[in-house]
Every structure is written in C-alpha cells, then in structure tokens.
Amino acid sequence: MAQPVEELVDELVADERGSRPGQAPAPDPDPVERPECIRVLVADDQAAVRSGLVLVLQTDPGITVVGEAGDGAEAVRMAAELRPDVVLMDVQMPQLNGVAATRRIVERGLAEVLVLTTFDLNEYIFGALRAGAGGFILKNAEPAVLVGAVREVAYGDGFLTPAIARRLITEFAGRPPAAGPTLPEGAAQALDTLTKRELEVLACIARGLANSAIAETLHLAEGTVKTHTSRILSKLHLSSRVQAAILAQQHGIALRG
Image (cartoon, rainbow, N blue to C red; front, side, top):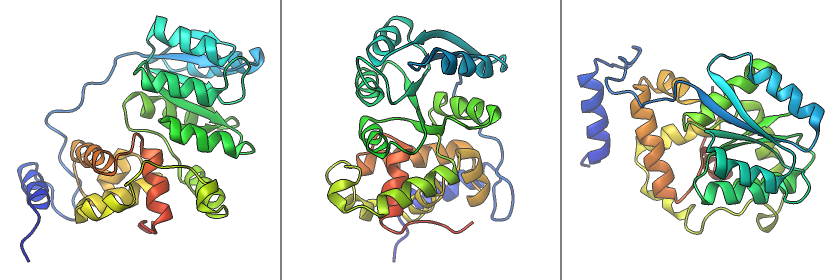
C-alpha cells in the first residue's frame, strides 16, 4: 500500500533536521514567533482571589497583568479594549458568567482564554469546551503550574495536564452522550481522515502532553508537532486541543505513558 503523502513529508522533514528514531529532534529552524511579554487579563469576581492570581503571575518577568475584571461582561469589554494575549477566566461570575464571556472573547478573536475551575461545576466546564477555551487550570494549582499554563495558552499550545485530562474524561464517561460536551458535528467521523502520525499526535494530546513533550515522545521537531496539531484541529473541525483530547478519549485513542 502506498504511503500517505503527509507521512512522507514528515519523514523528509525529519531527515532534513537530522531527527531519527531514538534521537532528540534538531531545533526547529523557523520557530513560531512568541511574544516577548505575555499580556494577561485576570477575571474573577472575588477581589482576594484576583489579587492572589496577580501576585503569582507578576513573579514571572515575562508576564504582565494588564487589567482585572470583576464580572464576565467587564472581562469582554476589557479584552476588547486592552487586547491581552490571555484572559484568565473564572467560570462563576455575575452579570455574565465565564462560559458566555469566553464564547464572546473567542468568537471575536480578542484573546486566548484559560479557564479557572474547581471541578465541582461540570456543566460550566462542558460549556467552556464548546466555547473554545484554550485550557483549564485548577484554582488550587501551584504557582509554577499557573505560570506555565498561561505561557502554553499564550503560545497557542493549549493547556491540559494529565490530571485534568483524566478528571474531565472520568466525568464525561459517566454521562450519557447527550449530557456530555457537544463537539462539532462530523468531528468523530473525520477521525478516519487522520494519518497515522496525526493519530499518534492526537493520542499524546489526549494524555495532556504539551508540544515539547509530544516532540520528545515521537522524536519530532516541536514545529512539526505544531503543524500536525493544526492539521488535526482543522480536519476534525475543532477549535481547541481540549476538544481534541476529549474526542480522542471518547474514541479510545490514547498512548500509554
């Protein structure tokens, strides 16, 4: 059987970069441009929580908090005004909840959104998935994890730790399909269009691995992983890695660590 063109391209790219099975990939010759300073808008209706989040984020010299919002409507307005790279969004807020605010921000292309969750509000989580959130983080996450999550989402990589992935999938698996997160029509059927390599990348995404970890696992350059991820989201009609992880887990696509 003829080898798919996309897989042949992958092998040629690996050859050019000196990457071989069992070896670390060579650096991407044309890395994606990343912002020198990540601009963050913090949205939470509790002033004390906002202050704590701001203090944690400001410990990283590469992150600047450009504003604070006390409700969802204010978060949307400030995102349009300040155009941050990332909005750190609580889900339970007055005026406009975090899910609705996320949807408006994502639809208008104002910023990436990292959702704050406690996992006792699963209906909000389902809604945030549909709204296109770029990642989820627990409110009790360690400071270093929060900073890392903001960076991943700002760079377009999305954020979903293995622990969060397992918890989300456990919750989804216990619900009938109609009660789970609604993914775009045709997403499941489009799985058949993925190449072998894309399925391997998707399996890694389902485990909550970041691009750097996927690159190491599959012996690819990080830039190649990003290209595969973009293709996967496009083919499956998905808007985020989180949606891709959910779909993969629902259909048993996962690599064992």
